[in-house]
Image 1 (cartoon, rainbow, N blue to C red):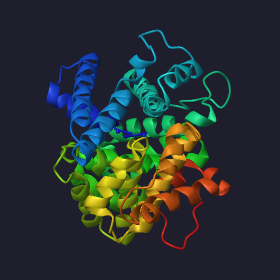
Image 2 (image 1 turned 180 degrees about the horizontal axis):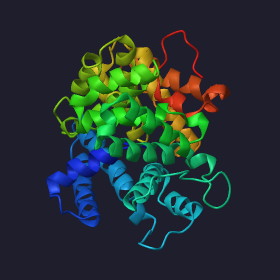
Image 3 (image 1 turned 180 degrees about the vertical axis):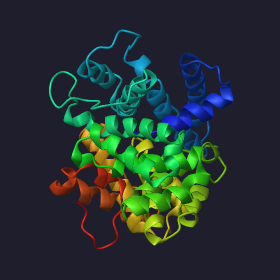
Image 4 (image 1 turned 60 degrees about the vertical axis):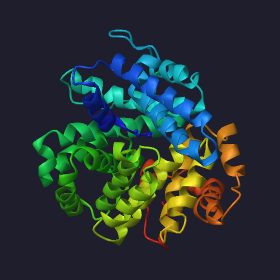
Length: 368
């Protein structure tokens, strides 16, 4: 959800480094808002395509601000924690777009609060009662918590051994229902590793493959998400989308991992810009609409739409996204619209577990 940006470890550390290690959460939030406002102004004053890259930057910044500032946005204070239902109600009052990223931030904060207290997270959310997450919030809460788990693992030697990874996965499974599986945690690991510890990716891939042959695919899906949110791919007029897509094609070691890196990139690109489909369409037209991996890109876009549908439903933003038709090129229908419409129409896909949204299975293999 950087739902996750799902943007957890990366955003806090990299933006924190820019502001200084002693920067407070409040100071970081202020800096994010000011930067976002500047991007909004640039978008408003620059005509046509010139303003779209600033719109994309503003969307990224708002998503990250909601994620990183989630506790403050819902009024959490030390010693003053309302029920999860009340937190999510307050998040919903922020509006559909902000609520998606705020809910993910709340999942991350929930896990982080346990680690900070010197505790090992155990069943972060009960199955019933006021702290049992509603169905609409399960996706962002788990993607946020998974980023917390990934960041903690990468800071320890546990990430360098098969046994350590196995223990980490088992701990995650204690905190997540079985239908959300280890795949979501491994995917978050790829996101965090690509942006914080990229040198560890070959080691992680080999160790994870020894545990489960599908784990490298989840890992590289997370890498694709991380490529989209990398600070070097946020600068307007830098051909960022094209460069990130090129890395998603070149960096993975094999076809299955490459397909998942592209799907992960598309997942993040679509979810961040869902309320501004012209941003997605323009970037694809200029940088990637002829990509030979249309099926993988479509999988990522459709999975992002399913996540939005899980959290928000068919709201005005999703309706406008599905109704959008760019003036030029057939790419929108092939890469985005048709896969999204098919996924929404397939009730079996809508009911599938969270992990199915974070792995692009080989062509011809039915999705779970």
